Length: 101
Image (cartoon, rainbow, N blue to C red; front, side):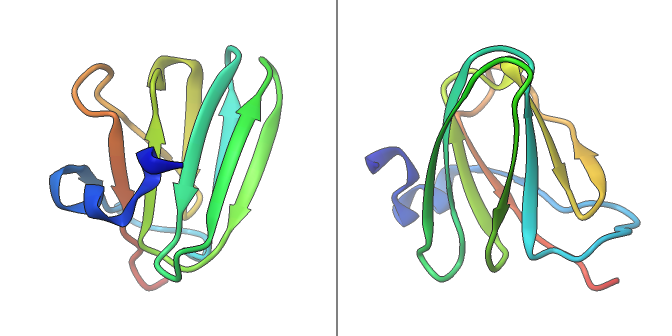
């Protein structure tokens, strides 16, 4: 999926959790509405997801993770045990950077 091409990392929004409580080797995603997204880890492992409302999914891999969604409002993302606050409409790409526990 071209939307998760590594070249997008340079013009993405960045998020690093404050006070992480879980390891940074996965991203947990809950769909509030039907959503499509992709997640690319630092080892170029690509996950393309199509989630129905109410579904959840865990993407395992190595941080930093590059995520793309056309509509962030339909998603709740958790990284290192903390919710990720995404400014809706600001950027379709998001990079999640981990901190040591």
